[in-house]
Image (cartoon, rainbow, N blue to C red; front, side):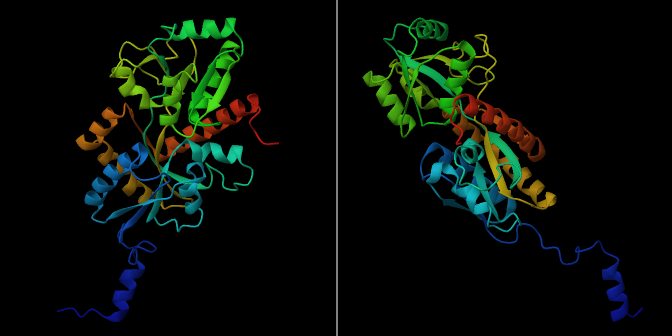
Length: 320
């Protein structure tokens, strides 16, 4: 029998790729998933479904940590201090991209200081009015706004929100002026609409139950295609305005993550996103599945950042 000497063992180890002998399997401990919203909301519920599925696929727990407040950027802020080993990740959404433009005290760069892992889904934004409103279509509403500059008022989630900027892009494209009324949440906006406090709302799909119940009328959606449960409602783009807003979201990590670790996480979340329980959740929330791999996701967010900066500049919302 050939004797294996210590020298031979060391020589064999030296022939391996650098770091291969000591490279731990990923993940080798629980993964911390930060959701920058309060528990039980739609953004939280969908990611908890994903977390359970990813836990099964990777053989390690994915522990959800809610960090609400600060316009939803506490996850991105936490990533600035986290090790880029893949064991701390966060939900990505448009406020992470937009808030550094609106708030000069934020020092992180929303593209360069994060690792984009996977884009997963978006939101169906739409323009809704009360069922007894005189406008049956979005063009009718816009014609009324043009004939009555500054007279109509509309509600959204908040100043600088995706819903707000979507409607202001319509106004800029059509040369219209109206009054924006910001609210604390979609539920508050829709209550204001039903009570007659505002004339219309630009909001995410919280309006869906009220549209189906006949309380509200959906005039148009901002998505690239028509909403499956509202096939008779046109898109804004179909109505002649090249405006598509789907407010994409996904998973991000700290800057400088190993591409191999990114692939493991992306593959697990991609598979989880396509499972029946998650697809059912998306269908119930009128959310499209918008899968996009990390590099393409990052490139899309870089383009969106430039577009958002220009819209905010035109609206005079950029800090001086």
